[in-house]
Image 1 (cartoon, rainbow, N blue to C red):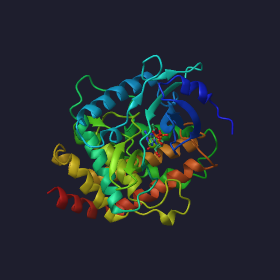
Image 2: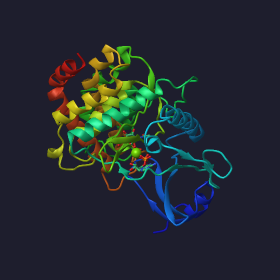
Image 3: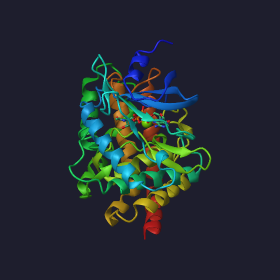
Image 4: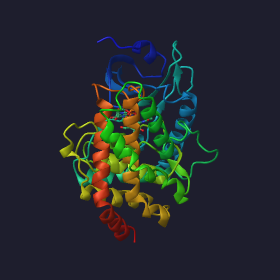
Length: 363
Ligand code: ADP
Ligand code: GN1
Ligand code: MG
Protein backbone atom coordinates (compact mmCIF):
# COMPACT_ATOMS: atom_id res chain seq x y z
CA UNK A 1 0.00 0.00 0.00
CA UNK A 2 1.35 3.41 -0.89
CA UNK A 3 1.41 5.71 2.11
CA UNK A 4 0.19 9.29 1.71
CA UNK A 5 3.43 10.61 3.21
CA UNK A 6 7.05 10.07 2.28
CA UNK A 7 7.93 8.29 5.49
CA UNK A 8 11.55 7.73 4.56
CA UNK A 9 12.19 11.46 4.19
CA UNK A 10 10.30 12.14 7.37
CA UNK A 11 12.26 9.58 9.34
CA UNK A 12 15.47 11.12 8.02
CA UNK A 13 14.42 14.39 9.64
CA UNK A 14 14.59 12.87 13.15
CA UNK A 15 17.53 11.77 15.28
CA UNK A 16 16.70 8.07 15.02
CA UNK A 17 19.47 5.59 15.78
CA UNK A 18 20.74 3.45 12.87
CA UNK A 19 19.05 2.72 9.54
CA UNK A 20 15.29 2.67 9.07
CA UNK A 21 14.21 -0.88 8.17
CA UNK A 22 10.39 -0.74 8.34
CA UNK A 23 7.34 1.51 8.65
CA UNK A 24 3.80 0.51 9.51
CA UNK A 25 0.61 2.44 10.27
CA UNK A 26 -0.17 2.02 13.93
CA UNK A 27 -2.99 2.45 16.44
CA UNK A 28 -6.71 3.20 16.16
CA UNK A 29 -6.84 6.91 16.87
CA UNK A 30 -9.61 9.03 15.38
CA UNK A 31 -7.53 12.17 14.86
CA UNK A 32 -3.78 11.88 14.23
CA UNK A 33 -1.81 9.56 11.92
CA UNK A 34 0.58 7.26 13.76
CA UNK A 35 3.36 5.11 12.25
CA UNK A 36 5.67 2.62 13.87
CA UNK A 37 9.23 3.08 12.63
CA UNK A 38 11.80 0.33 13.11
CA UNK A 39 15.53 1.08 12.82
CA UNK A 40 18.52 -1.23 12.97
CA UNK A 41 21.24 0.06 15.27
CA UNK A 42 24.28 -2.13 15.91
CA UNK A 43 22.29 -5.17 14.80
CA UNK A 44 19.42 -4.62 17.23
CA UNK A 45 16.03 -3.10 16.36
CA UNK A 46 15.10 0.24 17.92
CA UNK A 47 11.51 1.43 17.48
CA UNK A 48 9.81 4.80 17.44
CA UNK A 49 6.35 6.21 16.88
CA UNK A 50 6.13 8.93 14.27
CA UNK A 51 2.97 11.02 14.33
CA UNK A 52 1.42 13.68 12.18
CA UNK A 53 -0.57 16.22 14.17
CA UNK A 54 -3.95 16.85 12.61
CA UNK A 55 -3.87 20.59 11.99
CA UNK A 56 -7.61 20.75 11.24
CA UNK A 57 -8.23 19.71 14.83
CA UNK A 58 -5.21 21.29 16.52
CA UNK A 59 -5.11 24.79 15.05
CA UNK A 60 -1.69 25.48 16.51
CA UNK A 61 0.52 22.37 16.37
CA UNK A 62 3.34 24.49 17.82
CA UNK A 63 1.20 25.16 20.91
CA UNK A 64 0.59 21.41 21.22
CA UNK A 65 4.31 20.68 21.00
CA UNK A 66 5.23 23.40 23.52
CA UNK A 67 2.88 21.79 26.03
CA UNK A 68 4.24 18.33 25.31
CA UNK A 69 7.85 19.47 25.75
CA UNK A 70 7.06 20.94 29.14
CA UNK A 71 4.89 18.04 30.26
CA UNK A 72 7.29 15.27 29.23
CA UNK A 73 10.27 17.11 30.77
CA UNK A 74 8.37 17.57 34.03
CA UNK A 75 7.28 13.93 34.15
CA UNK A 76 10.86 12.79 33.49
CA UNK A 77 12.12 14.97 36.35
CA UNK A 78 9.44 13.63 38.69
CA UNK A 79 10.49 10.09 37.81
CA UNK A 80 14.19 10.61 38.59
CA UNK A 81 15.45 7.53 40.40
CA UNK A 82 12.28 5.48 39.76
CA UNK A 83 12.86 1.94 38.49
CA UNK A 84 12.23 1.49 34.77
CA UNK A 85 11.72 5.25 34.41
CA UNK A 86 12.30 5.20 30.63
CA UNK A 87 9.09 3.25 30.20
CA UNK A 88 7.00 5.41 32.55
CA UNK A 89 6.78 8.63 30.55
CA UNK A 90 6.86 9.45 26.86
CA UNK A 91 10.16 10.80 25.55
CA UNK A 92 10.33 12.95 22.46
CA UNK A 93 13.00 12.24 19.86
CA UNK A 94 14.40 15.53 18.55
CA UNK A 95 14.55 16.40 14.89
CA UNK A 96 17.96 16.73 13.19
CA UNK A 97 17.78 20.50 13.63
CA UNK A 98 17.45 20.06 17.38
CA UNK A 99 13.82 21.11 17.69
CA UNK A 100 11.23 18.73 19.06
CA UNK A 101 9.16 18.56 15.92
CA UNK A 102 9.55 18.71 12.18
CA UNK A 103 7.53 20.61 9.62
CA UNK A 104 7.43 18.87 6.23
CA UNK A 105 7.28 20.47 2.78
CA UNK A 106 3.46 20.56 2.95
CA UNK A 107 3.57 22.42 6.27
CA UNK A 108 2.43 19.37 8.27
CA UNK A 109 3.82 18.97 11.80
CA UNK A 110 5.43 15.67 12.79
CA UNK A 111 6.87 14.45 16.07
CA UNK A 112 8.44 11.24 17.26
CA UNK A 113 8.56 9.36 20.54
CA UNK A 114 10.66 6.44 21.67
CA UNK A 115 8.51 3.34 21.44
CA UNK A 116 7.78 1.76 24.80
CA UNK A 117 8.57 -1.91 24.39
CA UNK A 118 6.83 -4.87 26.01
CA UNK A 119 3.69 -2.89 26.75
CA UNK A 120 0.46 -2.24 24.91
CA UNK A 121 -2.86 -0.46 24.96
CA UNK A 122 -6.25 -2.16 24.70
CA UNK A 123 -9.50 -0.98 23.20
CA UNK A 124 -11.62 -2.35 26.05
CA UNK A 125 -10.88 -3.46 29.59
CA UNK A 126 -11.32 -7.13 30.31
CA UNK A 127 -10.65 -7.22 34.05
CA UNK A 128 -11.11 -5.15 37.17
CA UNK A 129 -7.36 -5.06 37.57
CA UNK A 130 -6.92 -3.40 34.17
CA UNK A 131 -9.48 -0.76 35.11
CA UNK A 132 -7.77 -0.15 38.44
CA UNK A 133 -4.39 0.16 36.75
CA UNK A 134 -5.57 2.61 34.11
CA UNK A 135 -7.37 4.82 36.61
CA UNK A 136 -4.36 4.84 38.91
CA UNK A 137 -2.13 5.84 35.98
CA UNK A 138 -4.33 8.79 35.01
CA UNK A 139 -4.66 9.82 38.68
CA UNK A 140 -0.88 9.70 39.05
CA UNK A 141 -0.51 11.71 35.87
CA UNK A 142 -2.68 14.50 37.28
CA UNK A 143 -0.85 14.33 40.58
CA UNK A 144 2.58 14.56 38.90
CA UNK A 145 1.51 17.53 36.81
CA UNK A 146 0.02 19.42 39.74
CA UNK A 147 3.56 20.71 40.37
CA UNK A 148 4.22 21.90 36.81
CA UNK A 149 5.68 25.41 37.13
CA UNK A 150 3.87 28.41 35.55
CA UNK A 151 2.94 29.59 32.97
CA UNK A 152 -0.45 27.99 32.36
CA UNK A 153 -0.39 25.40 29.57
CA UNK A 154 -1.74 26.35 26.15
CA UNK A 155 -5.36 25.45 25.44
CA UNK A 156 -4.71 23.26 22.43
CA UNK A 157 -8.43 23.02 21.64
CA UNK A 158 -10.37 25.85 23.29
CA UNK A 159 -13.53 24.76 25.14
CA UNK A 160 -12.71 21.12 24.48
CA UNK A 161 -14.95 19.81 27.27
CA UNK A 162 -17.37 22.74 27.37
CA UNK A 163 -20.46 20.58 27.10
CA UNK A 164 -22.97 23.44 26.57
CA UNK A 165 -20.92 24.63 23.56
CA UNK A 166 -20.81 21.04 22.27
CA UNK A 167 -24.57 21.03 22.66
CA UNK A 168 -24.92 24.30 20.74
CA UNK A 169 -22.75 22.82 17.97
CA UNK A 170 -25.11 19.85 17.80
CA UNK A 171 -28.12 22.16 17.53
CA UNK A 172 -26.44 23.97 14.66
CA UNK A 173 -25.73 20.67 12.93
CA UNK A 174 -29.38 19.64 13.34
CA UNK A 175 -30.62 22.96 11.95
CA UNK A 176 -28.26 22.85 8.95
CA UNK A 177 -28.72 19.12 8.28
CA UNK A 178 -26.26 19.42 5.39
CA UNK A 179 -26.39 15.72 4.48
CA UNK A 180 -30.11 15.19 5.07
CA UNK A 181 -29.33 12.73 7.87
CA UNK A 182 -31.42 14.26 10.66
CA UNK A 183 -34.55 12.23 9.85
CA UNK A 184 -32.89 8.85 10.35
CA UNK A 185 -31.07 10.15 13.43
CA UNK A 186 -34.33 11.39 14.96
CA UNK A 187 -34.27 9.06 18.02
CA UNK A 188 -30.70 10.07 18.85
CA UNK A 189 -31.51 13.77 18.38
CA UNK A 190 -34.50 13.39 20.73
CA UNK A 191 -32.32 11.57 23.23
CA UNK A 192 -29.86 14.45 23.25
CA UNK A 193 -32.44 17.22 23.40
CA UNK A 194 -34.23 15.76 26.41
CA UNK A 195 -30.97 15.76 28.36
CA UNK A 196 -29.90 19.29 27.57
CA UNK A 197 -30.00 20.32 31.25
CA UNK A 198 -27.11 18.07 32.30
CA UNK A 199 -24.67 19.88 29.99
CA UNK A 200 -24.02 22.79 32.39
CA UNK A 201 -23.77 20.93 35.67
CA UNK A 202 -19.98 20.61 36.02
CA UNK A 203 -19.28 24.12 34.77
CA UNK A 204 -21.65 25.51 37.38
CA UNK A 205 -20.26 23.38 40.21
CA UNK A 206 -17.39 25.76 40.98
CA UNK A 207 -14.66 23.14 40.72
CA UNK A 208 -10.91 23.94 40.65
CA UNK A 209 -8.94 24.16 37.43
CA UNK A 210 -6.17 21.56 37.21
CA UNK A 211 -3.83 20.20 34.58
CA UNK A 212 -5.69 17.35 32.98
CA UNK A 213 -5.18 14.90 30.13
CA UNK A 214 -8.63 15.35 28.59
CA UNK A 215 -8.52 12.20 26.43
CA UNK A 216 -8.29 9.42 29.01
CA UNK A 217 -9.58 6.69 26.75
CA UNK A 218 -8.63 3.28 28.05
CA UNK A 219 -6.43 2.85 24.96
CA UNK A 220 -4.35 5.87 25.97
CA UNK A 221 -2.55 4.03 28.73
CA UNK A 222 0.10 1.37 28.15
CA UNK A 223 -0.01 -1.72 30.36
CA UNK A 224 3.09 -3.83 30.93
CA UNK A 225 2.93 -7.13 29.01
CA UNK A 226 4.58 -9.11 31.80
CA UNK A 227 2.85 -7.74 34.88
CA UNK A 228 -0.28 -5.97 33.61
CA UNK A 229 0.82 -2.91 35.58
CA UNK A 230 0.05 0.52 34.11
CA UNK A 231 3.25 1.99 32.80
CA UNK A 232 2.70 5.08 30.80
CA UNK A 233 0.03 7.58 29.85
CA UNK A 234 0.20 8.45 26.15
CA UNK A 235 -1.58 10.71 23.63
CA UNK A 236 -0.65 14.04 25.20
CA UNK A 237 -2.04 16.48 22.61
CA UNK A 238 -4.96 17.58 24.77
CA UNK A 239 -3.09 17.95 28.05
CA UNK A 240 -4.15 21.41 29.17
CA UNK A 241 -6.07 23.19 31.92
CA UNK A 242 -9.31 21.39 32.73
CA UNK A 243 -11.39 19.74 35.41
CA UNK A 244 -10.13 16.54 37.04
CA UNK A 245 -13.57 15.08 36.39
CA UNK A 246 -13.19 15.31 32.62
CA UNK A 247 -10.51 12.67 32.97
CA UNK A 248 -12.42 10.47 35.35
CA UNK A 249 -15.55 10.76 33.21
CA UNK A 250 -13.76 9.60 30.07
CA UNK A 251 -12.39 6.60 31.96
CA UNK A 252 -15.93 5.60 32.90
CA UNK A 253 -16.99 6.05 29.28
CA UNK A 254 -14.25 3.87 27.82
CA UNK A 255 -13.62 1.29 30.52
CA UNK A 256 -16.89 0.19 32.09
CA UNK A 257 -18.58 -1.20 28.97
CA UNK A 258 -17.30 -4.45 27.46
CA UNK A 259 -18.41 -3.31 23.98
CA UNK A 260 -16.28 -1.46 21.45
CA UNK A 261 -17.05 2.22 20.93
CA UNK A 262 -18.52 1.41 17.51
CA UNK A 263 -20.32 -1.83 18.45
CA UNK A 264 -23.51 -2.25 16.40
CA UNK A 265 -25.15 -4.77 18.71
CA UNK A 266 -26.28 -2.40 21.42
CA UNK A 267 -27.23 -5.25 23.74
CA UNK A 268 -23.51 -5.59 24.41
CA UNK A 269 -23.23 -2.07 25.81
CA UNK A 270 -23.49 -2.17 29.60
CA UNK A 271 -22.09 -0.38 32.64
CA UNK A 272 -20.25 -3.06 34.58
CA UNK A 273 -20.41 -2.03 38.19
CA UNK A 274 -17.25 -3.87 39.34
CA UNK A 275 -15.25 -2.03 36.70
CA UNK A 276 -16.64 1.29 37.89
CA UNK A 277 -15.66 0.36 41.42
CA UNK A 278 -12.13 -0.48 40.24
CA UNK A 279 -11.89 2.90 38.49
CA UNK A 280 -12.91 4.74 41.65
CA UNK A 281 -10.44 2.81 43.78
CA UNK A 282 -7.60 3.14 41.27
CA UNK A 283 -8.16 6.84 40.65
CA UNK A 284 -8.53 7.74 44.33
CA UNK A 285 -5.43 5.71 45.23
CA UNK A 286 -3.41 8.26 43.25
CA UNK A 287 -5.55 11.42 43.19
CA UNK A 288 -7.52 11.02 46.43
CA UNK A 289 -5.24 13.35 48.37
CA UNK A 290 -5.55 16.41 46.21
CA UNK A 291 -9.18 16.08 45.11
CA UNK A 292 -11.71 18.15 47.00
CA UNK A 293 -14.81 16.63 48.59
CA UNK A 294 -16.92 18.39 45.98
CA UNK A 295 -14.93 16.87 43.09
CA UNK A 296 -15.42 13.42 44.57
CA UNK A 297 -19.18 13.98 44.76
CA UNK A 298 -19.32 14.31 40.99
CA UNK A 299 -17.30 11.21 40.06
CA UNK A 300 -20.28 9.14 38.94
CA UNK A 301 -21.97 12.10 37.28
CA UNK A 302 -18.82 12.87 35.29
CA UNK A 303 -19.02 9.43 33.67
CA UNK A 304 -22.53 10.16 32.47
CA UNK A 305 -21.64 13.67 31.32
CA UNK A 306 -18.52 12.81 29.31
CA UNK A 307 -20.29 9.84 27.73
CA UNK A 308 -23.17 12.14 26.79
CA UNK A 309 -20.78 14.81 25.50
CA UNK A 310 -18.89 12.32 23.34
CA UNK A 311 -22.20 10.99 22.03
CA UNK A 312 -23.33 14.45 20.96
CA UNK A 313 -19.95 15.08 19.33
CA UNK A 314 -20.31 11.88 17.27
CA UNK A 315 -23.90 12.79 16.41
CA UNK A 316 -22.98 16.32 15.33
CA UNK A 317 -20.14 14.96 13.19
CA UNK A 318 -22.47 12.43 11.58
CA UNK A 319 -24.93 15.22 10.72
CA UNK A 320 -22.10 17.44 9.46
CA UNK A 321 -20.91 14.75 7.05
CA UNK A 322 -18.04 13.19 9.09
CA UNK A 323 -15.59 16.04 8.95
CA UNK A 324 -13.89 15.56 12.35
CA UNK A 325 -13.53 11.92 13.45
CA UNK A 326 -11.97 9.43 11.02
CA UNK A 327 -14.61 6.96 9.85
CA UNK A 328 -14.17 3.50 8.33
CA UNK A 329 -17.74 2.77 7.18
CA UNK A 330 -20.94 4.58 6.36
CA UNK A 331 -22.84 5.60 9.47
CA UNK A 332 -19.79 4.99 11.65
CA UNK A 333 -20.27 8.12 13.73
CA UNK A 334 -23.96 7.33 14.21
CA UNK A 335 -23.03 3.86 15.44
CA UNK A 336 -20.55 5.44 17.84
CA UNK A 337 -23.19 7.89 19.04
CA UNK A 338 -25.61 5.04 19.72
CA UNK A 339 -23.18 3.16 21.97
CA UNK A 340 -22.55 6.35 23.94
CA UNK A 341 -26.24 7.03 24.48
CA UNK A 342 -26.87 3.41 25.44
CA UNK A 343 -24.15 3.75 28.06
CA UNK A 344 -25.64 7.03 29.30
CA UNK A 345 -28.92 5.19 29.90
CA UNK A 346 -27.11 2.41 31.73
CA UNK A 347 -25.36 4.94 33.95
CA UNK A 348 -28.65 6.75 34.62
CA UNK A 349 -30.10 3.49 35.93
CA UNK A 350 -27.13 2.87 38.21
CA UNK A 351 -26.26 6.43 39.16
CA UNK A 352 -27.58 6.39 42.72
CA UNK A 353 -25.83 3.14 43.46
CA UNK A 354 -22.63 4.53 41.91
CA UNK A 355 -22.87 7.62 44.11
CA UNK A 356 -23.35 5.50 47.22
CA UNK A 357 -20.27 3.47 46.33
CA UNK A 358 -18.15 6.60 45.86
CA UNK A 359 -19.32 7.89 49.26
CA UNK A 360 -18.38 4.61 50.89
CA UNK A 361 -14.92 4.56 49.31
CA UNK A 362 -14.10 8.26 49.59
CA UNK A 363 -15.56 8.54 53.08
P1 ADP B 1 -4.00 8.70 18.53
O1 ADP B 1 -4.07 10.17 18.78
O2 ADP B 1 -4.12 8.37 17.10
O3 ADP B 1 -4.93 7.94 19.42
P2 ADP B 1 -1.77 7.69 20.15
O4 ADP B 1 -0.69 8.64 20.55
O5 ADP B 1 -2.74 7.27 21.19
O6 ADP B 1 -2.49 8.30 18.87
O7 ADP B 1 -1.05 6.41 19.52
C1 ADP B 1 -1.77 5.39 18.87
C2 ADP B 1 -1.40 4.02 19.46
O8 ADP B 1 0.00 3.80 19.28
C3 ADP B 1 -1.62 3.91 20.97
O9 ADP B 1 -2.90 3.45 21.29
C4 ADP B 1 -0.55 2.94 21.40
O10 ADP B 1 -1.00 1.61 21.28
C5 ADP B 1 0.56 3.15 20.42
N1 ADP B 1 1.66 4.00 20.92
C6 ADP B 1 1.73 5.34 20.77
N2 ADP B 1 2.87 5.81 21.29
C7 ADP B 1 3.54 4.76 21.78
C8 ADP B 1 4.81 4.59 22.43
N3 ADP B 1 5.62 5.62 22.65
N4 ADP B 1 5.17 3.36 22.79
C9 ADP B 1 4.36 2.32 22.53
N5 ADP B 1 3.18 2.41 21.92
C10 ADP B 1 2.75 3.60 21.55
C1 GN1 C 1 -10.59 11.26 19.82
O1 GN1 C 1 -7.51 10.76 19.12
P1 GN1 C 1 -8.31 9.84 19.95
O2 GN1 C 1 -8.90 8.73 19.18
O3 GN1 C 1 -7.54 9.39 21.18
C2 GN1 C 1 -10.94 12.62 20.40
C3 GN1 C 1 -11.48 12.45 21.82
C4 GN1 C 1 -12.70 11.54 21.81
C5 GN1 C 1 -12.32 10.23 21.17
C6 GN1 C 1 -13.52 9.33 21.02
C7 GN1 C 1 -8.61 15.52 19.98
O4 GN1 C 1 -9.53 10.71 20.57
O5 GN1 C 1 -11.87 13.70 22.36
O6 GN1 C 1 -13.18 11.32 23.11
O7 GN1 C 1 -11.73 10.42 19.86
N1 GN1 C 1 -9.78 13.47 20.41
C8 GN1 C 1 -9.87 14.74 19.98
O8 GN1 C 1 -13.11 8.04 20.80
O9 GN1 C 1 -10.92 15.25 19.59
MG1 MG D 1 -4.79 7.50 21.42
